[in-house]
Image 1: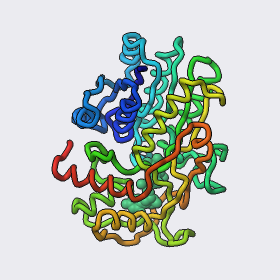
Image 2: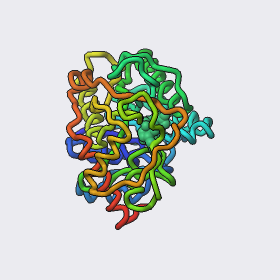
Image 3: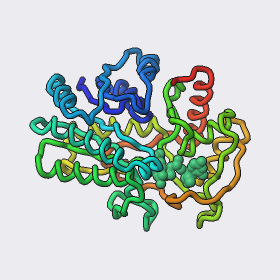
Length: 342
Ligand code: UD1
């Protein structure tokens, strides 16, 4: 079966996608510089799928290394490109790190494939919609000015990919706009490994419940939403991983929409922060220590996706609900307590 290159394949979404590619009969090949992940993830993946995926450790910002890799691996037919810096707050403090890492890597890969047909799946984000005018938000909603360098790299990367796909004809691209990825593999052998204090809601919830953090602050309780807290479309990481496999399959078949396309990847359902906490408490059987605090600057009030296009044209729909998201995230946190993965 075809070889698919997964950049950032030891990361959170990357590792789950490696597993789902293998399950679908593909041979995943990983490139990762391990800047935000661990070599131990390869052993964890092996425990799930029975084989250790082929792994190459280098930085995709190094043009010669990328060119040589592509030259030496002519049998790769598709790329799923996760490798990128992704912390919104850090991107505001260190914009050049974000523009360098996220663009150099993308451009180096595209250039290395400039004379070959290649299927390319890009990790984009619902952050491109900003605060949407209409909900659920569809793929044709306007892209709003990014509020962080991280968000800007996603918007500009989409443009780079669309322009390159239109200009050169050899790149067949799908950008997946993720909503909020959460949860972990059902084996609890892989999951999210946040560096330092988690900025995202779910790892903060599970670390609080296990006692690593004293309490969770709900950022804002006075928004114009039914319970006053922000609303998001949380998507189970295993469903999200499967969306990448569906995207590769559509590209292999030939996407009738042309050589550049975008899809929302969410469940289509919005949950408030307080609803997410209740769902976690129900699944874990633990009461969470939390308080309602001030709003966090830059937060979107409410966003959830219209998934009609993904359902009809990508042939993919999320299967797992908020209960499985919470129980798997909790099982993973408990696993990490027993066997820390540094
Ligand atoms: C953020 C990024 C988004 C990125 C995504 C990756 C912003 C504006 N957006 O989304 O671009 O793709 O992470 O996962 O930063 N919350 C709390 N307390 C906490 C942590 C979070 O109440 O300690 C709330 C937030 O206010 C928000 C919700 O939980 O309402 C989800 O937050 P988070 O997990 O950080 O994701 P987003 O901000 O939606």
